Image (cartoon, rainbow, N blue to C red; front, side, top):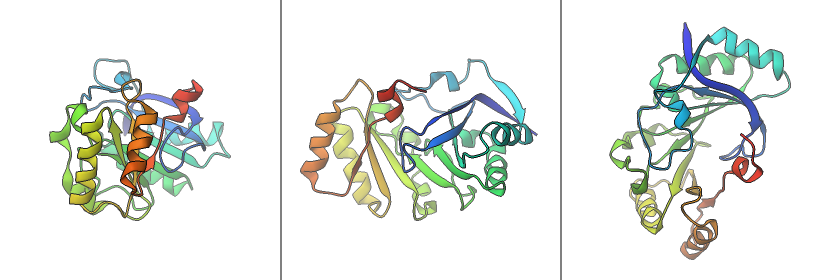
Length: 211
């Protein structure tokens, strides 16, 4: 059984609940969406990819990063490949602390309970709102997080409505400015104006100029 990969790499986790931790990234190839501000177009169709078995991926991690427990499964959209579930289970079985980054358009029901999920909620500026799978919210567990990419004020106020409609404040809700499209300062001020427990984040890896 093989998995299509865009790349394997090692870097600091730049966003989400595990920000700042050195992390082994497994970027799976392929995506079913085409967000207007996508920052990883190379993971979509039409770009080079390689195929590796799950055992090869696990062995690469163990041999090169034996002291690093943090593994991020990202994309593209990892859940497009059914083998991604077995990949996550295999990492968990080897003692990894696994984080899944998913775009929220495919069911997360089968994701192992040990895996920390960071799920996008696609905002209007992405052009992909209709692909949000709202039923996914009922499969989130304590510790999981939601990510809202904000490119303008409409995105911001829309996101608050979604949080209220689906009672999402029990989860960490990350608000991230779309890179080069919306001022981080303006987003920070909007969050403060609401006096609500929203979590501001910028993409640390872009600030540092690393992958």
